[in-house]
Length: 389
Ligand code: LRH
Ligand code: MN
Ligand code: MN
Image (tube, rainbow, N blue to C red):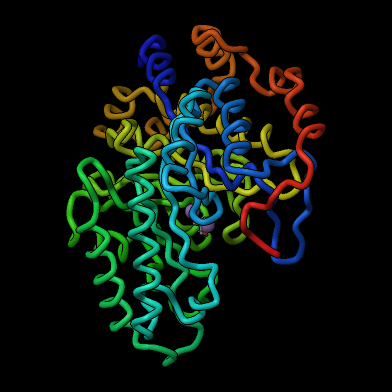
C-alpha cells in the first residue's frame, strides 16, 4: 500500500495551469452569454487566476493566448510577467492563434498561398519572442488547418508545408524552450484535418527533436477513444509534453474536466503516475470555457477534480496490482484499480490543504471571500475570451 504521507507529499507538489481565456466570456457559435464582473484586460485575468491559486494552492501558472492577451509596448509582456509574479503567479504556455483571421480560410501554415504561410509563421515566431519576454517555457501550437472536401487540396503537400513551418519554429526555440503540438480530429475542418491525431503529432515531433512534444487535449478524440492508452504510449516514447484538460460529452465541448467522466480522468492520471509523468516535464493545463457557470468557481472546481483523480491514481496499490497481473488474476487486478478509484479522497485533500495553510474547502472559501461581488462592482464591460461574435 502506498504510504499516505508520500501521496500527500506528491499532491502538494502538483501544479495545474489555468487558461487566461477561461476567465473571459465565452459561448457557442449560437450565443455568448456575458457574465458580470469578467476581466477586461490580461491583468484582470491574472487577478482572477491569483484567487484560484490562493484557494487551491496548486494553480501557480497561467497560459496566455495571443492575440487574445495581447499587450502593447516594447516591455509589455515582461511587465505582464512581473504583474503575475507580484501576485504569486508565473506566466505559462504561450498559445499561438492562427485560426481567427480571414486569411486563414484555407489554412495557416499549410495554406496553398506562400504569403499566408509566411504570415502564420511570423505569428508563431512572434510567440517565441513573447516567450523570451515572459520567461515561458512552452509554445503551444494548435492548427485548425485542414480541408472540407475531398480533392480540395493535396493532403501530402499540406504535410510538407506543415513540416517546413514546424522546422522553422523549432530552429527559433531557445535554451529550455519547447514546442507543444496539439492534435484534434475535426472542427473547424470537416474532411481532413492536417494534425488530426496523436500519430501525426508524434511523427512530426519525432523528426523535429527533443524540444518538440505532443499535447493531449482530452476533448480532441473520437468518442470511445482510449485516451489513457495514448498517454501511456507517448510517455513511454518520451513525447508527452502536456495536457489540455476538459470534459466532453459529444465533441470539443470544453466543459469542466472530470465533470463528464471522472473515471476516464482517473485512468489517464493512473497512466501518468505509472509512466513517471507526474513531473514538471509534463504540463497539466486546463483548456475550458465556462459558458453558463460562474467562471472562477468553475476553475476552482476543475482544479479540485484533477487533484481528486490524481490522489486516487497515487493511491493505487502498485504491488498488489503487479501481483494480480502477473498471476493472471483479471478480477483481482481490476479490483485493485477500482478500490483506488472508489476511495473518497476528499478528506485526504482537505488535510493536504490544511497542511499547506489554506482553507480545506476551496469552493466555500472563495464564496466567502467577497471577490465575486467585488469584481461585479468594479468591472463593467468585460471582454470575451475570443470565441464567438
Ligand atoms: C482548439 C483548442 C486549442 C486552442 C484552444 C482555445 O480546439 O483546444 O488548444 O488554442 O482550443
Ligand atoms: Mn486545447
Ligand atoms: Mn479544443
